[in-house]
Image (cartoon, rainbow, N blue to C red; front, side, top):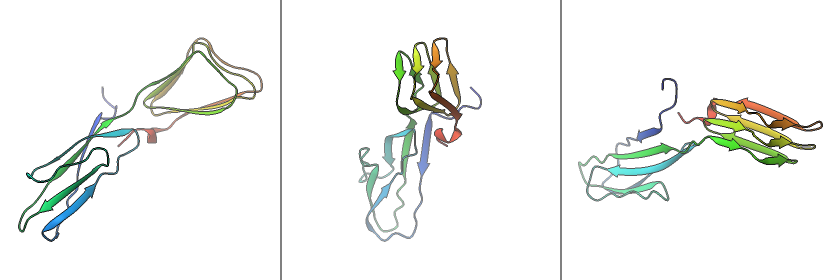
Length: 143
């Protein structure tokens, strides 16, 4: 579908001028993404998904390429069957759908943020003295 973000993201970093020996590369995982693979093109470098790092050994004259693959962790958020009386923040990527039977009662204060759309369905209610704010925030979508 045009205009929607890719559900996969690959990044390669190039570092030159390293002396032979062992070095480490670390991936900073963007919001709403999870690291799903690390692959290096030599035989003695293996990545660790849990720590998002790869120690690699560079021999004299060798070039090592490591590729970090991230997959989207975005999931639509469904809000149903709840009465909220507290301050709450709900974030959905790419979307939030509220209702049926989603109620904000006094003194409830609900903020909903989604990257693409927010839908208020039949059965969604905000009572007197309660507050509801909705915002589309494209920063919730990974690049």
